[in-house]
Image (cartoon, rainbow, N blue to C red):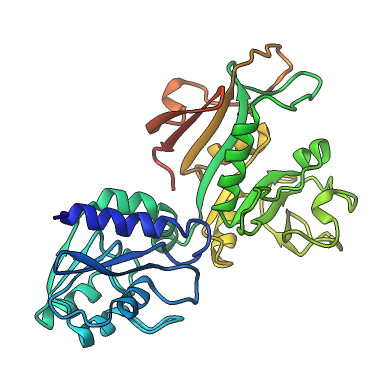
Length: 360
């Protein structure tokens, strides 16, 4: 017979299938077990669609004496869909096992208390760390109003993202580039500086064969007003929205939106930009550089996670472009500290992922 851990892991795995599709909602999976077998299971597929518990309960039918495993606390408030906790109250399973409480202040324990008050056995905390990591974007957004920010780059072993002539294609291999597109598929927005657009003219879209995922919003910093209408991000028909961020009231007739964000002359205040994106229900941002943009992001302390792809190359040169440009830390005590660092082989490259300490 399978254990509680097995069924909860199944719920978390189901939830992960919706990666990149549920924003601004969390990813949630639900498994219903009766007499030692799974009688219903489901996951939340997209915002506005049925919650995992609702779909799983419909699949299961009679849940008397059943155990419901759910990766996030059942909601107790009316949003785009009715509360899941109320449905569980009506159907009265014998036991509900929850990986973690919902960090949403509108829920945060209320759903669990409703179930307990009705005499349903409730257990919380099984595989909680896995559940929290799965929904790290939602947790950051719902508790701070700010998007979860990932700093990504492809660099040589000596930390260069281009040669001194600006040549950057390709430092990393095709496997890393494909993994980068998976990252794009999982976020609401991609952020780059106008210099990257001018030099590389990228499409900033998700290009994965056979994938049904959409393209994130393209957010381009143009504090120095360098952009014109000939770039791929402005092409029609539009593959993804293009939002231009500037410190002035300049018009961009080819943009889908213009965000006027205060800052020093020519420089966008990135924290204020994150606040504005949060107000627009952008829950996650992937910063793809270049070096100056990444430097500004670390200086503004908006980065939550790094994903650096390292190719087996040495570029060298004083004038070659570094992954994180700018002035940099004056002393090691001022350096950005990371934790939870992991290395993964991606083809011939290495992907380094880590979380930033003392982010906002």
